[in-house]
Length: 162
Image 1 (cartoon, rainbow, N blue to C red):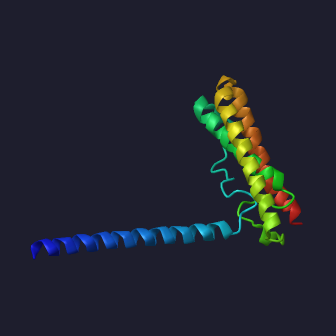
Image 2 (cartoon, rainbow, N blue to C red):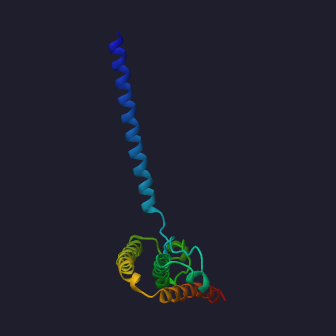
């Protein structure tokens, strides 16, 4: 009697575990399918600058910190500038702009995102290997230039809204 009860409990635990695993995979698949069909932002939602700096603040930073800021700004510029005739802020989708959300346009946007990612991967690898040899003052000046370029997008928005 005791052995059959133990076997029964063991069998039930296995069935429950199997059922939970199946439910987990089905749920994951459903969520994944919805994510693929979700509208995609033209400008990556990661194309944001957390903080702008002044020359005094940048001059007090270590070269490694400056390199990270430099790379972050390059990424934002590459993810933003090619699209300013369409949009200047992350989160705007094709549907928001009246672009048909069909397979052709989705594929074009996906290919562009892939190309951008490939370019950025290569560029960041180059920056990490070569920029440590740059002059600290040049890094500071470049960061300030990139930040001013990004700030000018706000002016572009204002001009565009007139």
